[in-house]
Length: 67
Image (tube, rainbow, N blue to C red; front, side):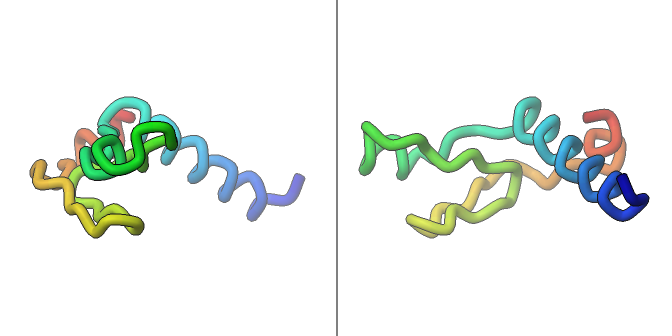
């Protein structure tokens, strides 16, 4: 595998760990679309479907790198 592909795979794995540790389901997705899978939001992220913004404070550099 090329170095670029390995780098992108590493970024993808890190994003999965962040979502697993700090992600929460969009409450608007849960309320309006109960049978669908809700969007998983990180702090300060916006739901693309409903426009809901997660109001939790942004992750610190330490939290981001620990995931």
